[in-house]
Image (cartoon, rainbow, N blue to C red; front, side):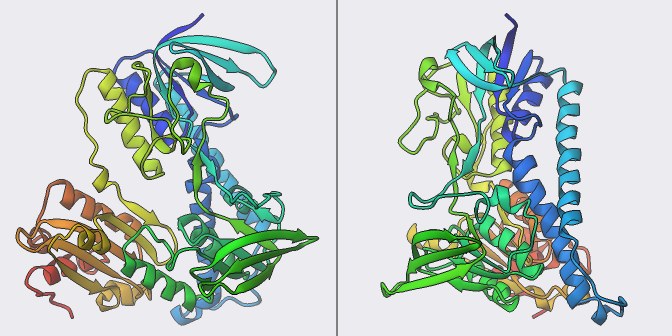
Length: 468
């Protein structure tokens, strides 16, 4: 039986980063993955493929809507080749997952393909595709089994017409009318992909706003931008039935007045969140406790109820984000090496990769009001930037929330072009406990979208934005 210092179950961003960091710190490491490719949901059927389709569909939308204004004329009709688009997406995925395999080889990490389940607290059985089982021993084990798409109890996902994000990434035709249940990150991103390609898109959301976990101003601005793109929104609607009849899907919901509303489309994307995935793990055999929501119970150091076993990423409490899982993977590896790492969960940014992009870090206005914190707001519109006008990306704004007395930045919220990249400035500032004036006094290159961050900081500092 092969013995290891650390065995990691699951090879998503949390798992593979944990394995690499353990190997860097001198531990003999193994990683167990049930699928033939490494990378988990994120690389195979999540973050990476969805961004590939978002980029491809964005190019198409620019070609049919904006090229002419830029003085670019394309003779004949611009057509979508969905097969090629999906093929390019898959090529990106293949290249990325092979990159993870390279990193495993480079760091001398043993990769086992099969389903990992606990025999006891120090032994993991690996059931392979050919039915054979191999057992390995490890001093420490890291659970990084991730999450799967959730559904509603009355919805039967048939993976053909009633689909999750996994199937939406590999459709063979462009839907005529895609009904999206859930106005969160995944539903809006994939809804926008197919809207650009010509589908009618209707979003049904239970809450009274889309992206409900983010600052209310971002929700409002994103909905305004997506309505301009002709997406339809039905907020405060409670879905009560989803039925397929041939190639038609009928969704029934109650609106906020309690009246029944019927939606008919040819595809229904169910994007109501994700659930922790521990199926087949046999956690009980190792003394690992699973809570009532299906998450692995952990303490502040991500240690489970079994002292030598840790858990990270989507399978534990907190935001289900790849970069949060990566931080936790590094943290556990460093704890095992006797170091004292720390994660400030308030500074894990959230991003929606629609266009305009939406990004945020720290506290929302709603959270500050609820906590009765006195704060000031600095906001600056993207349309006031020369760079935004040059690229015709004028939607959105940057908003900075700062403590009224100390001027310390408490939250940064932005929507606009390249905000997914810009938010790191907010994270960096808050990590070093910068004041709004600190940001305002830093030189920002001109012309850039980043100038909106400086201007918002100026607006939060005695309301002295320069370009508005």
